[in-house]
Image 1 (cartoon, rainbow, N blue to C red):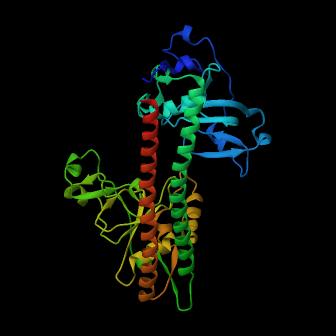
Image 2: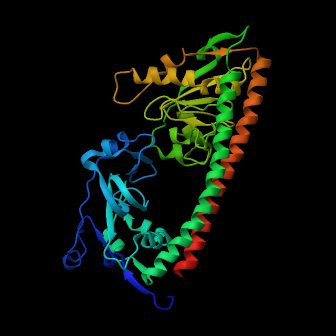
Image 3: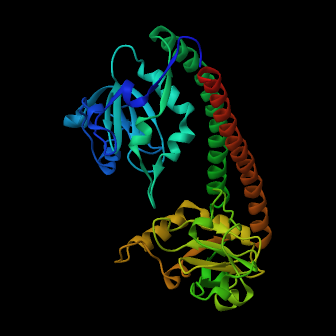
Length: 397
């Protein structure tokens, strides 16, 4: 530890808005009060150009107005700990509306709360390990209370924050630039998708079932271990479809044996998969190898008269997606669902095979550009996070 600094427990330098089981009562004599709303209410307050921060537990970020916040308006300088999920610790100073967070403020003027926030970010991996439980994780606050933060004098705290703010701003600019490039490529792809798939003279219209074989997935009995004891073929679920945001399928998933594949259904390469039930209804992807899938997924395997990538792009068009969602949500069911019978009679516009191939090749090229920039963005985020941790390590070690 650096000369003149001292380690202090988090619970010694902040005041929380709750008392915690497992922390001695005599250590929790002070408490602050804030107003909280449900996550649904919080998101319903979001407006463009608002000046009141919406403090969510997850990655959602947004603002509202003082008028909309009403009696739920809070004001102050706080650090927030989500009550469930991940250790997405945030700092905010000013007006805000909170949902689902444990909040704390500085205990006295010897503590600069934003400095404490940087100290917690440096120990984020450990704090993440303090979120425990089956299903949704919750913070074990006695451990978080005891997290030790190295504390220098107040002027040094302000100096460190100023330096880290400046460096973090440069790092965020790198991330923002990569994100801007990625979004521009996505916008170009969507514009091309709409332009190239606008019907022209000579185009026909075909129902899905007229383009090839349509089926629904099937789950082999989970109780039969012989169905899942070999790596014969990937067994795809909705989460594996479009996992990369570009129609790809994650083949590193649960595997079936040959016996299991025979008990279910095998769909050959160049099949197109669409989720037909649940929150991700209309999620779309295509395979480049044989796979099996569960019954939440409808599948079309086009015949050789049609280019499968063209059909995939035509089904990706917003108009087709809207038709799927409309059919699915019109059903009187708890979850949106579209049966194979309703799905396979939906239609797309079809040009000649050579034109299908030309359009698919053009969209493939644009999609590849998006994928490259997506990879670059992911790598940039990793680099930015590493740079931030290196800066924090330099300060706090």
